Image (cartoon, rainbow, N blue to C red; front, side, top):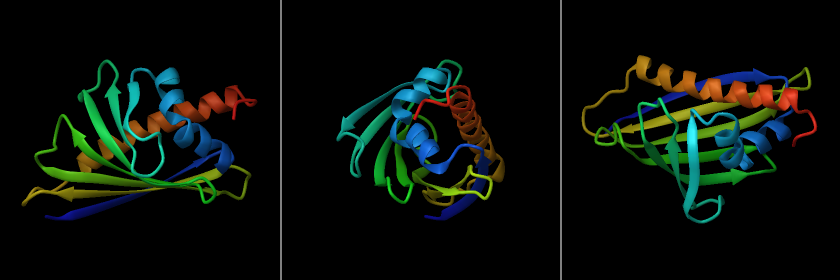
Length: 159
């Protein structure tokens, strides 16, 4: 088994607490509402969003995947840190044990925030993650992030 790590940063004009609440705390309801082509539904199988909870995300029309199950590993609303693992998915799961993501939002000098994300891919056997595969997933995540940012800029009284 190998572990491959990928890190990225995105800067937004939205303050960290507001972006964290919209993307993370309320993301299960907000994202299917404003980006239905990405996530069709999000339902909790176990728990209610706190650490240990397991949720099933059903992808929207046009996605190459049907669903994934995520386990919430950590949720710190004060430090604005969220960590979860993809523990089941309809594709690639025979090659990956899991994928763990950690997102942290920090204040940026201009009043917005910096979103730092670390992704760890736990492979099975000799399988190796390609940079191309990681970039494709990150591009989709960035698109969702930018839609949430645009929604918050257009609706400043939300969150």
